[in-house]
Amino acid sequence: MHGMDKQAAPCLKEANRFNIIEAQELIYPAFRLKLPTFVHSSMKTMWITHCRLDNRWRILTDHLWANFAVFRGQNIIFSNAAYRGDPPPDIWSHNACMGTNASYMSFLHDLDGNVTEQTNDISVDTLVIATTPDSWSFQHFMDRVVAVWSQAQLVIPTTAKKDTVIISGETPRDAIVNELYDLIAGQHFHNLKSVYAKRLVFSCRAPLFHPFTTMRITETIFQSLPPSSSSQRNVILFLSRSIGGKTRNGGRQLLNEVEVMKAISAMLNATGRPEQLQYFHHDEFNGLEDIATFMRDRVKMMIGPHGAAFYNSRFAQPRTAVIEIIPDPEKFFSPCFWSQARLLGQDYSVHIGTTQNDALDMTLDDIDSVVQLVQDRLVYLDNSYRVQDALLHTYDWDTEVRPED
Image (tube, one colour):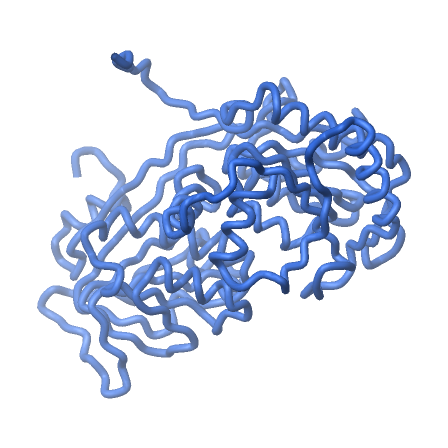
């Protein structure tokens, strides 16, 4: 079709031999994310060395930014189709939803053929396939299911939320995930072998990293919250892995965090800063609205060892500082919270702790440098913070923007 690849969504639709009723080829523009702030050049070198091993981005020669290339996604809607286990849910595989080999072939049939609705089928109007890996977990709901949902909204903008169903894998283990499902869809199905849909939406070819899909869920959550009741965000939230609630996965505890907390508190008192340092006790919050409102209205900074609690920065404002303490990158390296914070336009710093054991528990040998980092990032937020210092959009054309009247 017009010189396009035959696998492009419009070409699939134009073939007109199948039950594809709509097909979108999506172009997500390239963008850049600012690399973290570091207190020591040796830590910067270690972090960049390991970050370069990931081919999903390219570290620029200035060692200040990472470039994310243009991504092509697809939305394909099928009529009278059934989900019967493919793409498979909750497995880490190239065949899973969002995997490089995610396939829609099980939904495809000739126009003169038909999918017979089985007696044990659940029948729905519009079904969004979101059988991503570990979809039952809070963290992978936020980084994968949400990306698929965000992209699907482009092809079903007029469908009422109550008429849209999402299918994923196992039942979520965290109540907050069920609340998020209720926010974005009419129903959500789990552990079902067969669902028949009048319209089945395949949006599994969606980007893991992009400002559009990342910001869309945060915007949706913010729109559901009551108006802000506080104009002062003054909480520095310490995300402990030993105090404040049981962690799902052990390890990565900060063994001298009491000394770190005391040193940060002493700095705040000595400099007369208005911020309050406190532990994050996630069990004290009563659901999505409570925790998201707190993060939006009160939290100015998050600091702590690498762990899923950092996913709560999804509920925080762009003018928020995130300081992540990570183990030796030779033993464990996951830059997911760097990309998340920067995609949300947030300030992000990383500090490498001294790994003490196989559980990746850590100590901070230079507490003073971390205290100085906290102080510097607070001053940065006060004086000169701009979203474009975290996230840069790139575009191929020199576009003219009409000046505001």
